[in-house]
Each structure stands twice: as structure tokens, then as C-alpha cells.
Image (tube, rainbow, N blue to C red; front, top):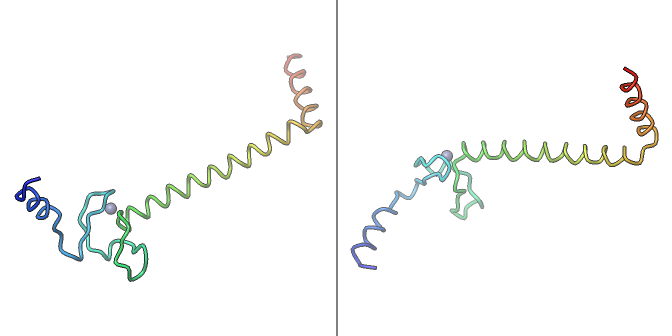
Length: 99
Ligand SMILES: [Zn+2]
């Protein structure tokens, strides 16, 4: 790589110390708009607080649906071995046939 190219890269990467570009909204924001990964370490998350918040909501929603899916699977599983439920299903099917 030529020296000029490296200098150009340097110039492009140059950001005032207290600013950072969010990888989610691509906006350059002040560091106070980012969460610190570790307090005092000077390392910040790559998404700003706003985007990070949005991602967190999405994550929580996903966890929620996973939680309910697992619950549903459990019920389904227990129904397989539930004689009363089998009986109920049989009756239900027979009732429908009658119609
Ligand atoms: Zn952002």
C-alpha cells in the first residue's frame, strides 16, 4: 500500500475523540450517546443508545416468543400422554362426523 493511500485512510478514519459512528443508523454521535462496554475502559458499543435500545426490545420480544414456544411444546408433549385429552379429541372427531 502506498504511503499516500495510508494517509488518506488515516484522514478518513479520523474522528474527534468524543464522537463515534453508530453501525446501525450510521450517524455520527457524541460518545455520551453510546453505552460503555466497561466503565472507564473507553470502549463503547458499536450501536448508539437509541439503536441499542431498539435491538434490546427485539431481543426481548424474541426471547418472549421462544419462551411461549417452549411452553406450547411442553403442553403438546403432555397432551400426547394425556388419556383424557385423547378421549376428548376422539369424541370431538366423532361429533364432527355426525354432522
Ligand atoms: Zn444508532
